[in-house]
Image (cartoon, rainbow, N blue to C red; front, side, top):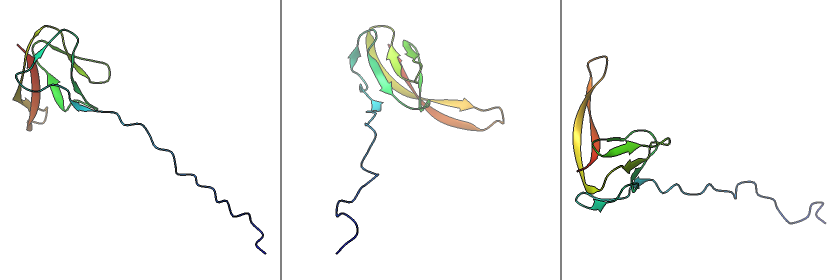
Length: 90
């Protein structure tokens, strides 16, 4: 006879909910005030004209218009450069 019950207990069945990050609108789409453009962790995409950054780095529109994306060169204090994506509402 076995001296343990045959139930088994698992401790790894929990999982966190998905965060649904990423681009929410595409280039050339029209947006209204307050619409979310990008959900992100950190500043992978930076805010341009007509766009503000939220507390959790979410980018949202502050005016009605058409969305456009472009690249911007950023220079660090050690003179190294990198390209960042920028979203604007024109």
